[in-house]
Image 1 (cartoon, rainbow, N blue to C red):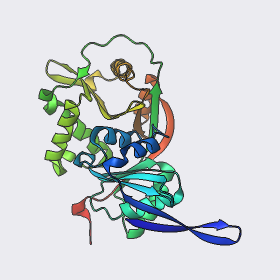
Image 2 (cartoon, rainbow, N blue to C red):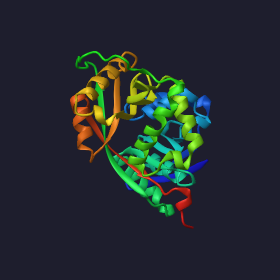
Image 3 (tube, rainbow, N blue to C red):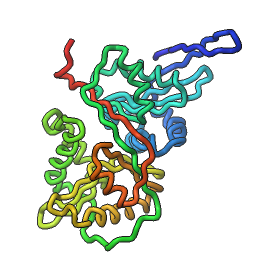
Length: 300
């Protein structure tokens, strides 16, 4: 447990304003979900993990921490691990959670809104941590109504037998964004995660004659928001308006169970931005993802 004290000014008197950071337990789930529900589009990943796995689970690939004030009210929640995510309502909570996060040895990336990640990194980097790569992304969101397009046949949840079709594509997309191929650095774990998404019914595909035509993964799902990643269309099918038809069909189905769908697009990918604009998505925020050096690259 970490105790951190900042200073607040009362007239001319500076008084201590301590906060406390501690690991969260499954018994904290209801309180944490209520805290995260204040900004559902920005907290969908953490919320979905708690709904799916509970607060304490190896499937989360990290540890949930809470930052509380003197009377025990939450000021911040962070998932610290492979992917480090944070949601805070005060600068002191952000600083305290960053101090805890920098002790984690296996962080692959830190993700969040641009300004929050910049502040988080200013505290996190004090331990001498360095970046391997940084990407700026745009958060897009879409809700009803969805433009009606020609119906699409064949869009469905992937089958377990199709793992070998979708897994290499997902690895290729991950490499394009992070310059790390998960099939090379963690083949067993990556395979298990792809298979689990298929078993959860969250990988959507169109397959014709044994070939993958279209794919999209529901990475996170809550009653409020669905977060999509890994949207892919076979190259020879591009520039024929098939992508917008496939996406519109998928969005209609997803919005039967949630209020909105969101995704991230690299700010340099103008083609993808144009595609999602055409699908009806709207810009919501600028995000920053910082990738850290892989363990074998760290120099002592």
